[in-house]
Image 1 (cartoon, rainbow, N blue to C red):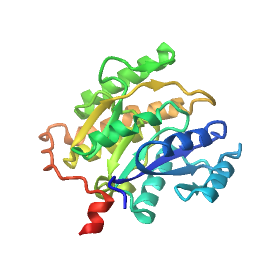
Image 2: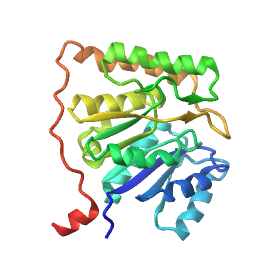
Image 3: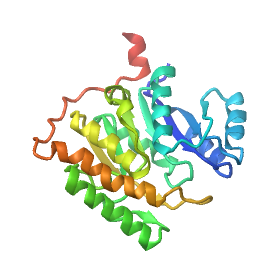
Image 4: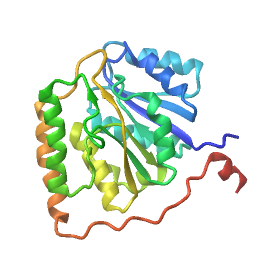
Amino acid sequence: MSSLPKSLVVIPTYNERDCIAVLIGAILAQPADIEVLVVDDNSPDGTAGIVRELSAGDPRVHLLARAGKFGLGSAYVAGFRYALERTSADLIFQMDADFSHDPAAIPAFLEAVREEDVVLGSRYLKGVTVVNWPLKRLFLSYYANVYTRLITRLPFKDATGGFKCFRREVLQALDLDRIRSDGYSFQIETTYHAWRLGFRIREIPIVFVDRRVGVSKMNRRIVGEAVWMVWRLGLPNFFRPWPRPRAARPLKSMADRGAE
């Protein structure tokens, strides 16, 4: 039995047929006990069909095909529920489908999560590690994080990033029914609730490269949602003390569990 914790990577997709097969292959090639769940929102380009073919030949590939385009946040929530209810994954990752998040960074997350409950891939921890973004998009992202820190008091440089790793018990503790936001605000909301619950959260630096193919899903509605959502999160707790971190707990591997 594997001595590594079992990991599941959740990837929401909408029209990602040009890169999804290569991305899945790159994830499965990492030195980890790892599987992939694609949550597809009825992509008209046939993304789900490609994943379905891959899953027929490899039990490590899973597909959750949804009937419509319901949004990034709800796709992640559906993927988290799948992970908790239908898999034995110890660790649940989330990442983008467009190679802006490098699968080669997964081992760094696995090392960091040995001592933490949540690991955030940060574009702003050591300067700015973003490649090929136009300045307007970079300024929007950077100052959205400054704004988020001011209102919510989250002590992280990059609360809007989408490359994360959660221990299973973190997602079990979150009230997933309360999370209804998408885009930037979904990333902020999940991290904020985990922080308020006292889970240990650490940022590690990543290099973020703008998508190779396809088009960005960012729009004004997503930006506007994030602007107001941070007030909804931060205002009720603004004068409360910072959460007390939980005691450290060892991360058990599947082999450790089998020996109990």
